[in-house]
Image (tube, rainbow, N blue to C red; front, side, top):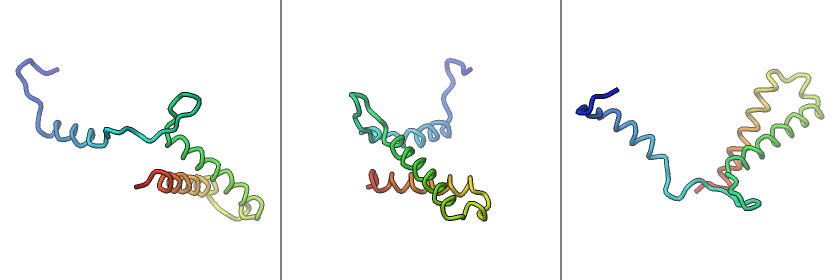
Length: 93
């Protein structure tokens, strides 16, 4: 704990200012569903999960699942790419 007369260091204030700079006045993008605010990042995450599941189904249907190594990493990467692309297309500026 600090004593009553101690001052906060400049690097600490700089760190707080840089972290707080990400906060915006207008808030995060959200949708109103059933009277409640639904964050847009959850919507994009759901799109990414559906994309990853679809990728897995496509791999199994085409036979790539038998020869493709690290399927979990590949499907997760495709899902993440789809989620980020959805975020960029829907909410990018």
